[in-house]
Amino acid sequence: MSETKMRFRTDGSYFAPDRSDNRPQPEPGDTWRIFWRHDVDGKQVDDQMAGYAICCPKCRQVHHWTTASNCPLPHINGSCSHEKAHTSCWTWTGSAEQNTLSATPSLLSDVTQGGCGWHGFLTNGVLTGA
Image (cartoon, rainbow, N blue to C red; front, side, top):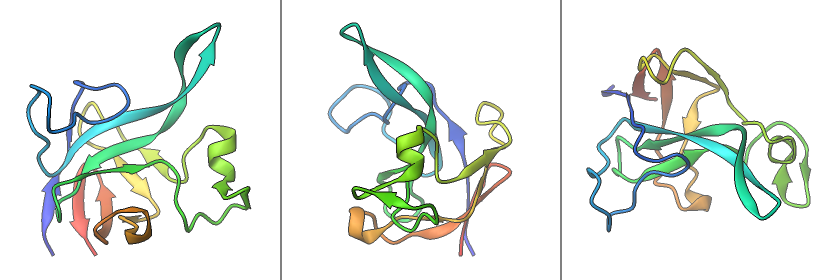
């Protein structure tokens, strides 16, 4: 079982940098916080935290863990109830800033949503493949 330590990055507020900008390229375990956004008087403002974007230890692409296709809550009009409530399908504990973040349940990069199929756990800041 391979292990990858997470590293919280603050160089993006919603999404990880794409490969065309000048910021350092994502490395496996790099993690960014994602917030729900909404429009207030023509301005985009942050709402509640939606989840995390994490650079995958398998494919080195950044996957977003906010809502899951296999979420146990009811789906309404094709989207998870968490999305409607502006929350996450995962329970996040620990500290992203201190690289001690944990996620429950396990993380799965859903191939039906463009992921690579990586499945594993984030426990106390360490990604471990299942």
